Image (tube, rainbow over the protein chains, first blue to last red):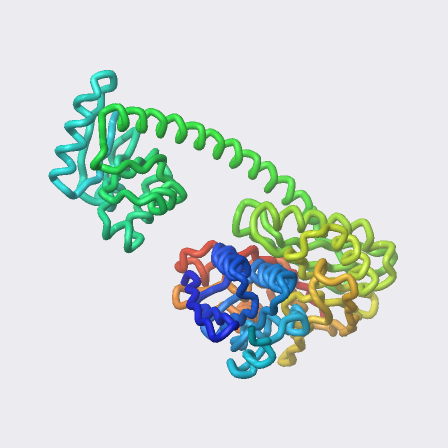
Length: 115
Length: 373
């Protein structure tokens, strides 16, 4: 299944609800989408991964680059609702220590400075 | 020139034919079918030089029109004839492989003839370029194959085997065995992130450094740290390498390893299974990374199975994963199988599992070490 990206803006925070697999071309689609958000000044970002069944290693590298780009623009990228499989990948690669991950949307929203 | 016109609107069929008939300098033989599936059938049966693909608004909106361009454009130049004058859609059509996008309303003899002539020439050049690239990829695949060890070390009391299948012509997986005299052998299985040429280049760089450094590094953790430092000299941060690297002490069967962000390896000893999980991050991500080294003993009759994620992440048509359950299943079916055969069987079972899905999947590599009783 290709990646579908839904967008919700809650105050200064943008939540991207992702559905499908984050692999192959979907990786670029997501990176382009986030680049567009950064260009429009929206840099408080949450990726909701509840319906992402699979992330491949290239996409994981892409998420790292995206995180760097968001931070460079003065923002933050947080990950929400990781499935067991995606969490297992994070633990294996030790990237759970790098990404901010959350199990509830309310927790993920907390601490984003209002504009 | 033989032209296949794909058009379901009878008025447009008449209009396009009339335009082509007025093209005095070129002679066109036109055959018309109503839809893309019929066109594919016609192209399989007859030889054509070019496709004129009429696309109505619904087909451009629901995406089926772009699929048709992609399908038909593989073999022949496709010119889209649209009733819909939209710059974005025109660009998308060209991105999907159309040679040109013409609006039916403004169609003239000069415009269509020129478009056909340019489309054929561009398609010919592209095909030539693709052939050259294909040839170079074949050479790259051959070179990459030569990086793999020509033979597996003959280790007293142990049977070692490996199998690697790339999903494309070149891939990011590798395995290696390095003999460390007098009585040790290093075993490596790595996976550079990214498919195709970028993955292959990173894989070649990693394996080259690993081979050069393995003999001089006293421990697996020293080797992995050295490798990480060397790979980090490049700046592009989003690509990394997962690596399972261990050294087997032949007389004792003690196996000391570092798992750098790689999927867990399995140590199977009778009914007992141990998972040799990640002991640190992948390579090429963090300059200050640290790895833990662990030691297990390969007791008589035990089997160590190391694999790349392309094996466990193979997915069938229902999006189920091959997973560790799939690996365990193959191992239990082939209890007395030689190591090389078991490695091959695991790769093939994962490929079989994903065959129907239509997804080429990822590279698949398995290394098996059997401690003989």
